[in-house]
Length: 139
Image 1 (cartoon, rainbow, N blue to C red):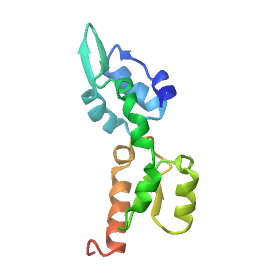
Image 2 (image 1 turned 45 degrees about the vertical axis):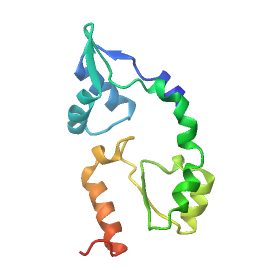
Image 3 (image 1 turned 180 degrees about the horizontal axis):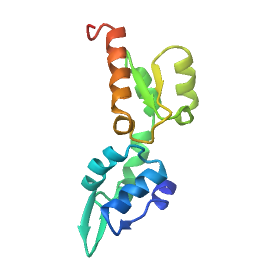
Image 4 (image 1 turned 90 degrees about the vertical axis):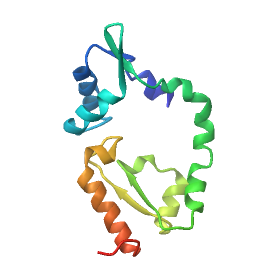
């Protein structure tokens, strides 16, 4: 995570430059969505735009967040769907569990980190299909 933050600019001269960075870095791929969400993530001071949230200050909580994340996800007895922008983000435990059918994996390869923003239609389609499959929602 720290390496990701090291590659993230601390500030931007304009909102449009922040949006361009988001698009060029692959953080987000949908320009229309980025133009809505990125300004809300920034704050203006001293002639520049800075990230509203200092993610580095949350570092003490990262270990607790990620410890046993896969195990805890898999321990939920309800049907599960996991949306990913790429399968390379699955650890071994999750890869094995997915092969065993313990959860449904939906890979949306055309997206960056923010799948629901990059392709909202595909996100809704995946979730509705999942809900209908498990009869949580009637067609």
